[in-house]
Image 1 (cartoon, rainbow, N blue to C red):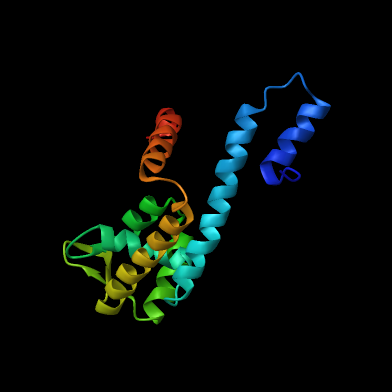
Image 2 (cartoon, helix red, strand yellow):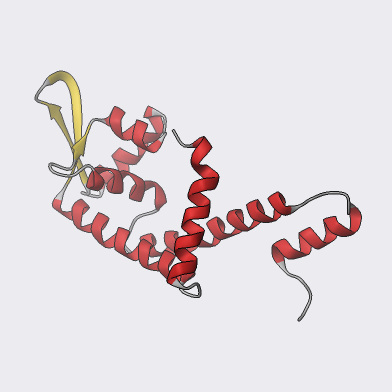
Length: 164
């Protein structure tokens, strides 16, 4: 076995310098953070192959998950993505220019607007979600299905007090 790498190296250093500390939580969060970094980078590359970045995917995926007729108000989109209205507007401008979404007056609210997926936007969303999920599955392929289920259950339990 070689020298410890990554999180193990940091934990070993703290154990040497501060043997009085229980670094279990640091080890867990360090690994969760590192896994999120690795998966985020790989998934972003997968989205890039479909001509979009993570911010654009978030909008397209939110509309796609909404179901027929694949439309939401800009406010509902912003709330779903936990974004400011300004951040949402910039994303919508880019997606509209690319022909992936369209904005139209809300027939039930004279002052309102509805954002909907175009056919091309629907196709990009479906292909990109499949590609991103395939990358996530690839990154976990060294774990057995039972290990993946156990990890998912443990992470769900760890997050439960903080979910709203």
